[in-house]
Amino acid sequence: MAVGNVEFAILGAGAIGSIIGAHLARSGHTVVMLARGQRAQGLELRGLRIKGLVEISQRVPVLTDASEFSGADVLIVATKTYGTEAALAPLIHARIGTAFSIQNGLMKNDQLSAAWGRERVLGALANTSGELLSDGEVLFTRNEQLCIGELDGGESARATRIAKVIDDSGVRAGAVGDIQSLEWSKFASWAGMMVSAVTTRAVTWKYLSDPDSALILARLVREIGVLSAARKITLSDRSTLPVATIARVSEGEAVAILQALGNQMRLSAPDHRISTLQDLESGRALEIEETLGYAVRDAARLNLRLPLLECFYRMVRGIDRIRR
Image 1 (cartoon, rainbow, N blue to C red):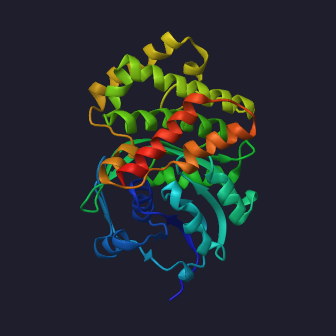
Image 2: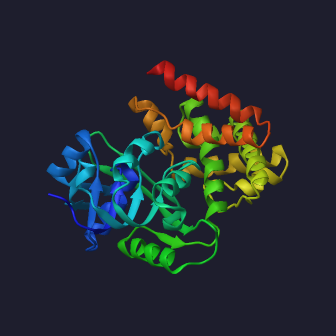
């Protein structure tokens, strides 16, 4: 049976997609999860199960056949980046009011705009953490803010309305007027931490605290700052790491900032692992081409030389290929 229009459709039932879906459904909103394989089977049998910051056990409709999906007021894309193109292709026929992606990287908005038009796409990032456990439960560990905003900047009623619904459900969210700056800032943080996690295989506080790994991370952030400046996008400190400051101060000062953050995390979140390390240790594919690869290709298009970023893009790609 085809599913009629719902308020929220969530493409991808990993940690963050599950957390948002469970909160929205618990609050009385109509939600459908678009999922496949064992994850879809588990959701059909046991529903969405969240623990950690909150305890939720919530039944939601699950669709495994995209041809049964007719549309939604809001589509939230929460798949791994390497599956985006294939996941979106069968949904092109659907009626989508607004779409946004909480994936890593910078390619996501282009992909959604190609599917439904730029006017239907919002920028977004999730400063939220969780981990999909082997038994299908999701451990909800961090609830900071899901930011939503217009790609061209400024305030908008729809971004404010959608953010309020999500925030009222219990996942902290807010509308912002500078979403591209925040998306690039999150990417600068994520890229440095992703490379550090894959190469050291350490929990977050350890590679932030070590002077050598902190130096490499700072240099990666600074190279992405060069790319963002060429795109006329200003980095912000409103991110996981204070990337605007790291890009501006001396290398020594940047390392000291990262080490201080590492020492804080050692006390407050000693077991924190970036999602990429979770993927690596679970044998899952890594998000490379739509994240690091996209930035490398963008730099080449702009005739920028970012040697550290290109080096680690190839190293991470090699690690992913060799170990699988």
